[in-house]
Length: 344
Image (cartoon, rainbow, N blue to C red; front, side):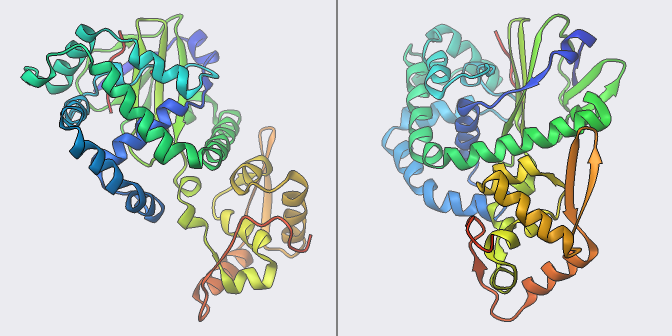
């Protein structure tokens, strides 16, 4: 297995970072795999996969580059620079474009674990990769970025609350498949037999993505390390938040949407981030649901988490099973109230 030794100082300075470039690369990986983890991803693939495949069919060299860079056990390093705080997509993709041709070819040999196809013996590979990432960003991610950003922020709020409850070890132990806290300052980052690395004095960032895949790790020299991980599935899957029409008619679609979301404990700030409703609206919905005995609340460190009560569970299940229960919109607010080596 591959693992990192993380010093106490590095762990104390660890932080969460949102990365538009990481989100775009995750979308590229999903398009390449063509297999969805939940109905929301399948709907996204149905919309965007035909155009992506047409683009690669028109550019077989870039198609070969993608297949080579997304190796079975190793991602070509230059495709996934370690994310930086407050970095825009344009700044991130600029770092991909700035890689030298010989460096990109060396990375591809590692991802292929063998010789480079003759067609890839050229210097414009970083430019081609950057152009494809720009296409994926512009066509499939940016139109939906504000919603994705709210989901990512909600995940960060949940993980931050988890830090206050169980410390960093609890958070690192549950980031993504293959990642777990081993104790003795060791973090397993994947199941592959790679040499350990010491992160003493380094910067460690944790980067959520909405795409429900395994994520990856990346680093630059010995100064910056990143763990890119899928955010909480219930947040990423819009289909899991569909409000049954019968429940929406009873409570109002926005309030019913809050109740549906609370199948997993969430804070007020998470609910604001995911629903797009204002803080005052979410607070009023929670007060009504609390007074009706449909949700419960408990304190976790400095956060207050809300979840459905037994009565709330019964109501949601009944609404989901009601005859003719189509979907009601859940977003209305107005009713009743990153020299790195990456591995996936």
